[in-house]
Length: 374
Image (cartoon, rainbow, N blue to C red; front, side, top):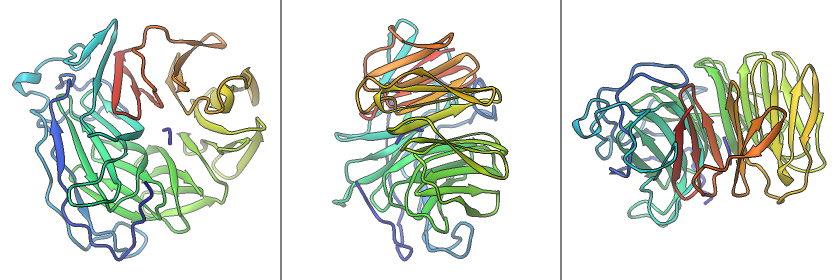
């Protein structure tokens, strides 16, 4: 959810791009536990991505161009011998109390900024990093965890990925900075999808394959067929609760809400509002100065006033009573009406958080991923 400039022109032909795969302290995989949709666990480890030429053929994905072969080999898969077992209980990284920590093998200069965990054996961690082989341009980067192995795909032709969200393991959306496209993963191929009026993206969220939202220099919606602009308002983070209940942190002073028809702005601060999350009964927003706000019964209240670092909290996520926000080298969790420090989490500069039905995931820009069972 949280937030190298490479422009991707519409005339660019993208060839196959390789990936690096490594057995870097993965959890074991194989069960159908956890996740956004609970779809079936994969039988085999995933390989690298292939890409479709981004030259547009209309409002939908490009259908022509260079497909590209899948690069690299995935892990052994959910039933692979070395990784056999329950991904909820096995850690081949470093255990610290209840937390399992590993480092994604992404080279010397990774910049991971977006995290989405569908299941313990289907996780994406995205950003950018060192140039791809043979290029002097910063690479977009997507790391996928299949329950056994982190598989890294880089491509210099794409801008740094700033967010990821999926409706299923074969229906995942990536957004990037300085881009007029979003990118769709169907389980085998990454396809550029033009977004009319877009210039850059910071975050993506949705509720289904026909209800996806992306924000940046504007707010955009995917209805299952095409992307269209919903609002000219800028956004730093988006969280979709339902088609008629969508929240956006503006990056400036406002929390924006969509009721299915109209966007309404609520000024919360005189400084930056960076991240937002909600469910059917409440919402939380966080930002500069480590300020945190809660929305309930139609009203916003201040839970924690501005007072810390100007960076503040850059990502917030939750499920049920497990609500976390991260940033400024801190991880805090809601306890009653107060966010309190999580004292047992291994130290890292976490900037991404995702809470699934079975696990809590934390990610740091340098590729550190820490998780525990809920």
